[in-house]
Length: 222
Image (cartoon, rainbow, N blue to C red; front, side, top):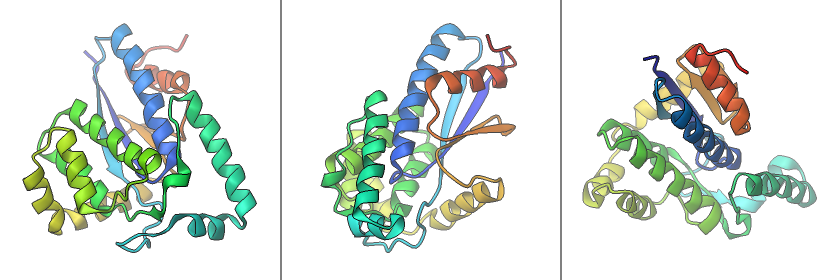
């Protein structure tokens, strides 16, 4: 059996990462059906789109307008993202987002879930819930209470998660992992790293991810 390892470099405030996750879900569903002899494991690595975001967050729309230059440009960008999201089954509700989150705690939560062996299905559900909370509900995913509730919905023990998030445990490790991704050449997200040998960047369609899986498994693309 030839196993495939995918590391997804992502940030939960990146809408393209939400789309990329859905595309990966679709690609893996088909792959696992057609190629059970090539099992795939998925892990998530942190990335900070804006590492200077204050812990309490910052107003979302003003941040975007300053970054992209005008309200009209932001409207156009969000419309393009929303259209791409619909094709992936994601309905964005950008109007509900009031604060752009500092994502250190969210990344720590994902890391913690992986570290304690929650299982790939539970981690996948956790990542999905974090994206949905930010982009569809408008919750502040830097808030300990919000993150604890999400963790509980995904089967994690809430009291231990809250205690973990109220500490600084693994914070330096998360920053180091994010820095490592940059040293590896990751400059944008999502980035999908296959077996530590090659990477696919961007919210590629399931077909492109399928081709990457074939390459990783040593199967000639058809």
